Length: 119
Length: 110
Image (cartoon, rainbow over all chains, first blue to last red; front, side, top):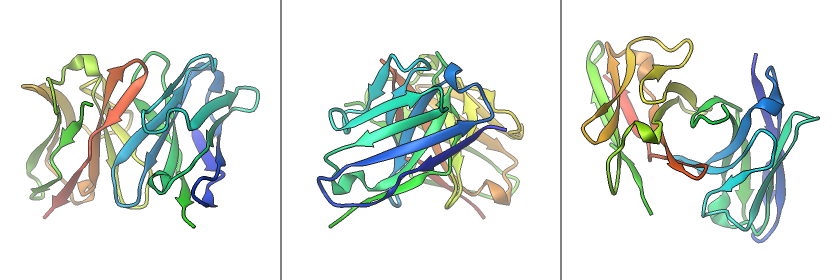
């Protein structure tokens, strides 16, 4: 059974940093691209970032480019999202999601971790 | 910047048929955008229903179907049930590894 478990969310002050983790199990992690998708309270989904199966290629939404960094450790079956220079607009539930390499849909999602940016 | 558009809300009677759509603020949606559809109930993570325009995900009832209607992607629910009351999001691939979601449609079954 595919499982994705996010952690690392919490309350952070504006301008601060946070690192999210997503531990995967139930599939060959190193064969799949991974993504982060967020949802602000009461709002819709926003794709944030993606990383190829090997980790060699990364993608970012314009809203986070230059502030967020996605990475992965295939030996630990874990994907990370380093978030810097956080603002109130980054307050959201952050989901990690699995994507088939070369295909453009998200077939499994974690339960999410809440990031709140507030003073 | 291209925006993905969806109807904010829709209502359907139990047993009825409803079609939700997904368009672009500029241009037409085609299979080249690899449309996918996700269902989300309050407090839960999204669940994929449809990918690559019209392929149902494993375990998804066949009352859900996807298509291209005119210049938009479409999700049709035939024989709506009470537990289909959810938020529905479409996702489009915009190229260069970038995906964009629509704003979502809140479906009421009453």
